[in-house]
Length: 137
Length: 140
Image 1: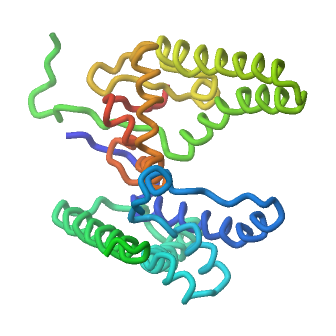
Image 2: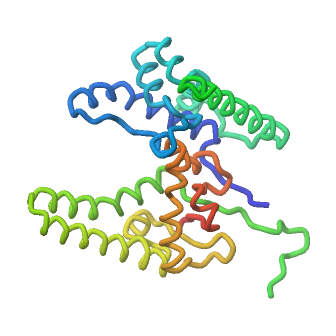
Image 3: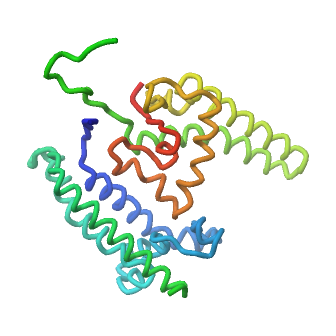
């Protein structure tokens, strides 16, 4: 069994990445408008026409960065749990940076397993949503 | 053959390169190729552009496949103190497998590039391409 040493936990890594993309999302529409760049296409949808579970996340992230909650949900509701993760995690990271919170502790295996299942269900639901959004269901 | 002391863990704690470090190394590898390509495009001459594209391809072949395959360190990985090795042997994977690994990165891009984010949550911080060819990126 591999024992992994991480400075941050997995949710913290994901939350930091999501927070970073949220900041980029704030300027993303302006970049598209000024450059004429169409944005990042989904290779799966470009090649096959079938969307993947994460289609619309760029649009949803940009929308939520501008407080457009409805537009975000219409593009990909998966952005909501990700935003909730960021909202819950950033205070912990700030508290730790200020020396007011302990370092991350490994989760019990049962909790890890339940979390993996929950994420898999969310991604599955997101895929169903995208298939419906693009007229496959 | 060596034996672990009785009662000691079978495998010592292993560290892997973080996602941010890997992105940094990848960008350092990409910069020379991008600069050569942009210079070629700026000439607005198809023949010169083709020449620069071939030079950029040569840089890619040398840096990402030959150098990284033989030593485990492309320019980017060397700059950031990382090493690409086989998960099974701990040794560099060779130029051929380094090429195959980069081809497998297509799979990382397929579902909205999420495969590239796998090191954020994966226990061995592997991308999907890393899992396909059984490689890990570790501190050198």
